[in-house]
Length: 109
Length: 314
Image 1 (tube, one colour):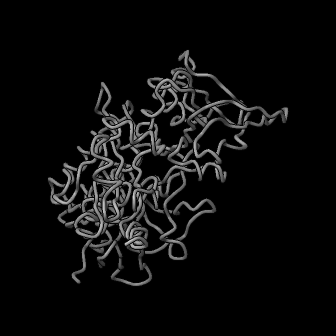
Image 2 (cartoon, chains in turn purple, yellow):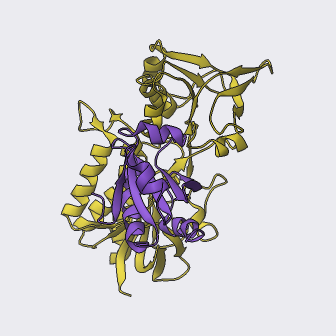
C-alpha cells in the first residue's frame, strides 16, 4: 500500500499534478506484475515522507496509463522520473538505494 | 548497540533458509534483505524443479512462503541495503542505510545479479528497450520483434515467456551449442515464434541518438560477417555476477569474485559463512541455494556453541 504522502498520477491528471506543479515531482512508473517495482515501493514511500512539502511524490501505473508512459519512452520498470517545471530533469532506471536517490533529488530542491 | 548472534545479508532461498534454521535454533537471526529482496526467483514465473511442488510454484509465491516460514519461527527480516561491512574483528559490524549492526556471526547470502554485455549502447538504452527482466518489461513489447541474448536456462525461459507478447523473439548466442538444459532447449525450439542467431555476438545496439532500441548489429563468430536485425527490445540473459564488492579485501574470493568456502559454508574468516549463488558458480539452483543456506546456519550454530567440529551433532 502506498503511504499517505504518495499521490496517484494518471494520464488524466498528469498535466495538472505533475507538469504544472510548482515543486519538483518524482514519478514512479510501476505495474502490478513487476517484482522490482514492489521492492522499490517502500523506498518511494519513505522519500515521499522525507520530502513532504518540498517534492511531490507519486506513482503512475503503466498498464492503466499508456499515454504518459509512451510519451516519456518508458520501456522498463521500475523507472523514476523527476520533473521540474514540466521537464524531465532526472531519470533512474531500476532499483537504487534510498541514499543514492536522495543525492539525485537533492540536486533539484 | 547490542550484538546479535546472527546477521544474514540477503533474502533469497539461501538467506531465508539460513534464517529458518537459525531461528529454529533460537539464535534470533536478523535478515537484512537487500535491494533485490527475495532474490532472482522474484523475477521468474513457474518454478518446476523445486521438490515438493508437483505442479510447480510461481517464483514470487515460493519466496513469500519461505519468508513466512522463517518469520513464523522468529526470524526478523528488515528492509535495508548493506553499504559496508567490517569483518576484521569481532563483533563484526554491518552498516545498512542509516543503521549499524553488530554480530557474532555473519551469513552472506547476497546472491548474484544479472550480467550485462558491457556495451556503451546497452547502458544508454537500459529502460528504453534494453532490459534484464522479462517479467517486468515484456508488456512493453506487445506485437513487436525483440531479441534475447544468451544460451542458458534463463535465456530459454525468457524467450518462451516473451512470445506471449512479442510477434517474434530472436535468440542470440555466441556459440553454436546452447548451455541450457535439454528440457528448456526443447521448449524453446518447439516454439514457432522463436528464431535463432547462433555463433553470433552483439556488437552494437541501435539507436542511442533516438533514445530507443531500433535494432542490433550482430557479428558471426565463424564467418566474421556482420548483419543488422531490426528489433525494438533486447533482453539480456547472459548469466550472473556475484554480489561481493562489499567483501573485497576482507574475504577470499576466486578470480570471478565468487566467495570461496571450505568445510561446509565457512569463508576465510572464522564466524563468517556464505551460501547460495554468492559462492556457487556451478549449480545455481533454488534448491542448492536453500541447501547451502541450511549448511551455513548449522555452521554458524556450531561456531556460536563453540562445539569442536568432530563432536558437533546436528
